[in-house]
Image 1 (cartoon, rainbow, N blue to C red):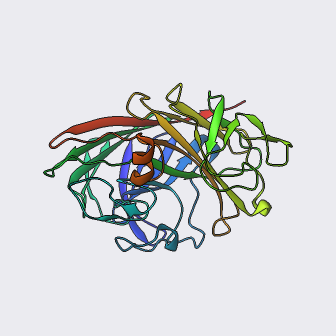
Image 2 (image 1 turned 90 degrees about the vertical axis):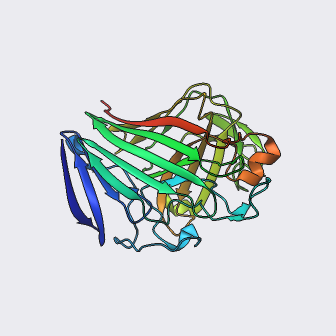
Length: 311
């Protein structure tokens, strides 16, 4: 195990590596995991910034103004909205509070501990990073330090370097479309997985990524709670399996974002486990799919990122 301070694409960073994985963290930019290289294949798993450099963000800014790459933590919302419960009369920033602000980062033995406090909302958020051979173990904790219950939506926002051979592997039968789509139609439409009929009645594969030239995006969620706390993508021309493991009792929802050149001309995909359904606290309240964090309550969960060779 090796940990060193580096400069990565213009910002101070920390590199954590073992024989299988090289991981780069940017403490001042939301503790973003900016790089994740699977060393046996010399393959960069994460989408990289289009301009090949990072710029520090301003709190409350639009997420799309900056790099849209790597792994960010979405909390306490993804989509901007007014907080819809008692206790706070505040706007929830685009993609939450945490991606745009500096975190406190400490190194203990072979673990990186990242901590931050909310700005408009009163909570403490912690993520611990540890490498275990070919597995990146992320352990999370959030604590309500305010005087009223906090309804916070968390999602794992990991943009990965997909290709036209990538396949989405989830043990599910149906998905719900959440963005207006030329393929899946209106928001709320339910489609079979992994194959369905598009708006014109043509068979389409839901589990595949199209080429960048399609110039479109898709966003859908598993319809209802996940059957299993596991979701995977094949990467590097089907040579590498990128697998997320998570506790389905605490993280029961899963979103999928596919960018086939339609957003900023970029090409990436994200598997987004979440504690609420879906995308904003406002929408989650409408569906009744979000739970409060009571005063002084603490919640813990994990994400394991497993990188496995495919034959």
